[in-house]
Length: 69
Image (tube, rainbow, N blue to C red):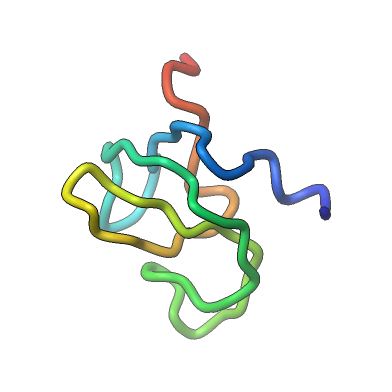
């Protein structure tokens, strides 16, 4: 696993930037693909399951651990 991937499946995270900023979710998987906010780039990131069961793909730098000040 590369240095971009800090989180693992089941970690609770907060999305800190982009369309879903402020939403909390749970990491489902680490991925290397296009994301919701950067569809033109292929980047390391995560599939995050939100409270409404929607799954979004965000870059590694768009999330932080939930409760992390």
